[in-house]
Amino acid sequence: MAVKPGVSKEEAKKKLQALITMKTKQRMIEESMKNIKYKIGVISGKGGVGKSTVTANLAVALANKGYKVGIIDSDFHGPSIPKILGLEDEKVLVTEDKKFVPVEGPLGIKVMSIYYFLPDPTTAVIWRGPLKKSFLEEILASTLFGYLDFLLIDLPPGTGDEAINLVQTLPNLTGLIAVTQPTEVSAISVAKSIDFAKKSGVRVLGIVENMSGFLCPVEKKVYRVFPGNGGQMLSDKYSIPLLGRIPIDPNIAGSADKGEIFLIKNPESPFTIEFNNVIERLLRVLKELNG
Ligand code: ADP
Image 1 (cartoon, helix red, strand yellow):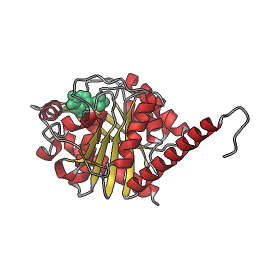
Image 2 (cartoon, rainbow, N blue to C red):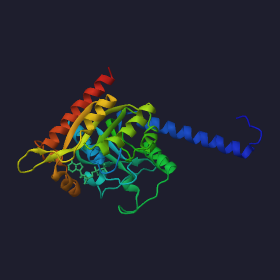
Image 3 (cartoon, rainbow, N blue to C red):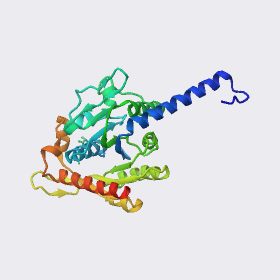
Image 4 (cartoon, rainbow, N blue to C red):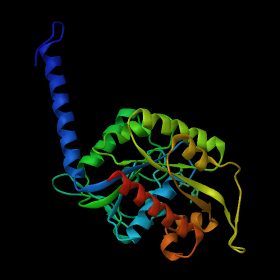
């Protein structure tokens, strides 16, 4: 490396070392991800819209169809995938050569979550941007997922560029799924993320509108709760397919709290039926992408 005037040999050596480390990490990520067919990030504009619920249920619906599925839960602010899938008491094992063995969940879903690295679930950890990036890089480079048809990445919520910057660490990212509620407030914040994704050259595969009405457990009818048509609005504005509209089902939150898999236990519920529709539409989008 040519040493510019004003740069000491020591500094140049450090820079070179950092470059080698970065390249090595990138190669490790490529190596560890090479047997994963589709890598899909799940984003939302705001917290609490059901991004993790959608990620977990997409994984279950896909695994239920026989696909091999993994999840990376990189929601630094509230990693909830282990709770939703009833895997809170599990542990990530570390092999002698410092690789992570993901937790095996229902239907063989392989789960890697930041949750497993926190001292306890209620501890607030202050994550700085670079720390988040290097943590995700470490997980991507060192987790033994093996062959997967789908790897879903539950990304931190936010309208900013953070989630998308993180996702760009992934080689050959297939694209993103954006989760919104029907309300304009939710849709506007997701619109910012979609806009940023498009500008960064990241494909948005589809939109899932969550909490689209309330499913009355007695009358089995869906009532509108939130105003707005956020999913359709985003779909029209950005020409991105609306993959589905998931109703509110009060049993979902209860099941998640108990770690029960609602989708498997309730195959006839409108929630399950709509998730299966989302999967069918997503598979169609992927088929079109592959020509
Ligand atoms: P986010 O990941 O966007 O922060 P979560 O997936 O953690 O949101 O969902 C927030 C809360 O809303 C959870 O208690 C979850 O069980 C509940 N929830 C999400 N989607 C639904 C739904 N369609 N019906 C009922 N409850 C839901």
